[in-house]
Each structure stands twice: as C-alpha cells, then as structure tokens.
Figure (cartoon, rainbow, N blue to C red):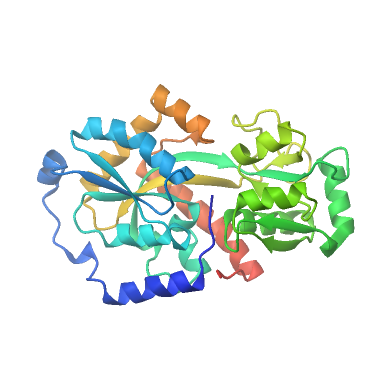
Length: 336
C-alpha cells in the first residue's frame, strides 16, 4: 500500500514548490457563517496519490457517491500518482479553491518530511485533518515451511539466524519497512532488509523462499496463507483483528507487548480551508464511512472502519508520527 519516496520524485516536488504561488494560509478567510451555510458552490475534487484500482482510490470512490448526494454537488476523484502519494498531497496543500481535499495514507500525513527533508510540505502544519476512514493491522508472514510451531518458536529461530535471514518490503520508508525495524528493536531479531517494487513481488519472493518474513496487508496475505503457500506468524495489533480473526496477534503469541502498528487511509484538506468547512466535511465523511453499505464495501477492501472526527484523526497523526518517527531516527532511515 505504501510506496517509497524516490529522490527524483522528491526533487521534482521541491522544484515545483519553489515556483508555486504562496500558500493559501495568507488569504483572508470568509466569514464563518457564510462559509458554513453556502458551501459547496461547485464540484468537490478528491485527489488520490495512487493509480485507479489502488486501495486509496477504491476508498475515495466508495465515499464519493454518498458524499455527492449529501453535498448536492458532483464529487470527482482525481488520480495523481507518484512519490508515494506525496505529489497529490502537495497539490492538496496548495489548493486555494476550498473545494479540494485528498484521500491519503499514513506516510503522507505523518512521516513524509521526516523521511525526506526535501518534501515541500509539512503534513503536521500544511494539512487539516478531516476524518480517519479505515485502519488495518499488518500481518507478519513467513514461507509455509518456516521453522517453529508457534510465534515464540519462530522468533527463537529468527534470533538464532541473525542477519542470515532477510525480510521483504515494497520499498524504503514504507510502513512495512519501518514496522519491521520496530519489531526488530522489540524482539532482538536482525533480518536484512530487501526492498521490492511492490507487495506482490514480496509475496512471490517469500513463496520462492528468497526472503524469510514480511509485514503484509491482511487482504493480500490471507488468500496465500489459506492456500497453504504462506504462513501467518501474527497480527500487529494488541488483539485479534476483525479483518482476519483466525490469526492471533503477536501480543497474544507472547512475542510483543502493546504493539499497535496499522496502515490507514484518511481524508485531509489544505490547512487554509476554513474551519467550518473542515468541520462539515469531517461530520459527513465520518457518518458516510459508518453507513452499513459503505462499511461493508470498505471491509471487503480490507479496512476496519474508523470514521473519526477531525480531532480523532489529529490525535492519530501525532501518535503515529511519534511512533514511526522514533524508529526513523533510531534506525537512520532515509527515503530513496
């Protein structure tokens, strides 16, 4: 789900930032009463930093139709893939029309600047949290013939193997990468990082026995596990996940304590968007995400529905920035 941020893409973003107009924070805001009562006055754009058919794209399109009905205006999903979603995030930051928001992933809203100082926006300052839409833990996965009969025995084998083992991820700076480094610090294992273009390649490498473990989205890993091609070691949540209730958590397996590592998708607006509009969007999107038919669609896409307030998302951003940012600094992780 996450994608690495490449140097070339980051440089392009930085150059674009240098020539872009001044951010909309300098604008004089419209009166709150008028803004809340009259908005929206034209179609709403949802920018997505990944291609059509990607997880964030599916989430955006799932909420677009009911949001359009609630607003009485068309809602258009605009895909702008690149730089791990940060090209679209930067476009959201710079939008000045009060009719542009984004559906983003963890990295865009938390650690983008920590991973690469050349990122031309600061998610903590330049984005207004709207609503946390869906969350999902990761599933620590190994080849079907991995050693040990349970999680504890598997981790004993991993510690004994030291750096002779390797783990796969969809790239440097992804949650799969940072999350595995977090697990390494908490369990004293030391597998070597092997980045791949995406999670499908990671899965193929694990099936072929080329890597020994990986953190994967449950929706991708579970079918391979059920088919007997891979093995589930544990879920990165304090308890079992409703998404894959048949698999124990790493905490339950006695390997970690209090581990909560999740991928998530959320709606965000430019920091310049008037607060009454942000509040209106937050209430609507949170309500839409909890609608039974929408909830079912999101669950089928691999998400446990959150549907939080803007304050709830802001708190999650702070917590994840601290957790993942601490690993980035401790391990000296830099984006490619």
